[in-house]
Length: 125
Image (tube, rainbow, N blue to C red):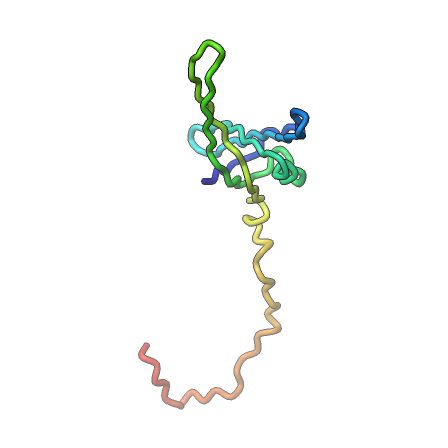
């Protein structure tokens, strides 16, 4: 699944527990009639993916939906959902056409000199 929009916030990487679990959160605001502010978390080595991004950038984030079940001390079962990001792409660079091949200058195009206009053309159009 993917979500795209502008980065509203990127939090610092936080480390939890003695095993060194790392988590970093970002908020992406969708650009639609009713914009949504979506919290996406990146965990472990995926935290570093956010190092090259800044607030305000337009991005596309590949996500997985995660769900967990938890039973509290009173015996009640609770369910929690999270959105985990695993890839992020800058949409501004793609929109700017930076990945397009260069266009040669007009001087590179020379007219054909060996054309004989009286030769019959057998093309069907």
